[in-house]
Image 1 (cartoon, helix red, strand yellow):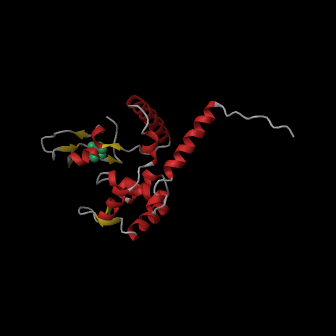
Image 2: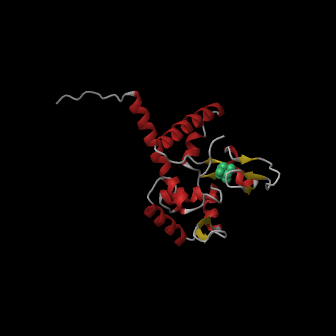
Image 3: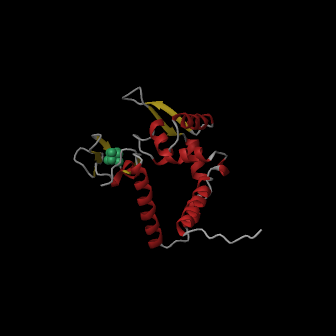
Length: 192
Ligand code: SF4
């Protein structure tokens, strides 16, 4: 039998690199004793604003089914890392939050694989990579009708230093926003 050497076309090489990178990054969390999806949920809840710390928003962020995310949240609750509470204004809404143990686990986590991978990049390289990935991801999500999420301060509804803000304001939800809210990510974000 004669074997010929097989060269991947460039597009397939790119796809292969992205797939391997994603697999390595998705493996984060094993060292903390969690499944990767539990780790991703924990990280999401640490950076999402109060409107986005719901089972529904977490389901959208993870791109999984409601049932799977419900099991993930239940596992994190059993481990004492996440707590659920009723919304003070709408009792039908469930809010999720990290417990002190959840924040502690994140604080003690070893360096994230994504941080280790990008540590050697120069600042312009990081900026170029970030812009390309953002374009790829938001384009892909938009085509499928999924929400892109994004940082509050970059949202077109964000009103910095609003007269009746605290100190800022969300024009969409007509609610005050703190400086911490401005840094958080939001399911309702629409890029400015
Ligand atoms: S300003 Fe935009 S990102 Fe911020 S809370 Fe309002 S909708 Fe969400």
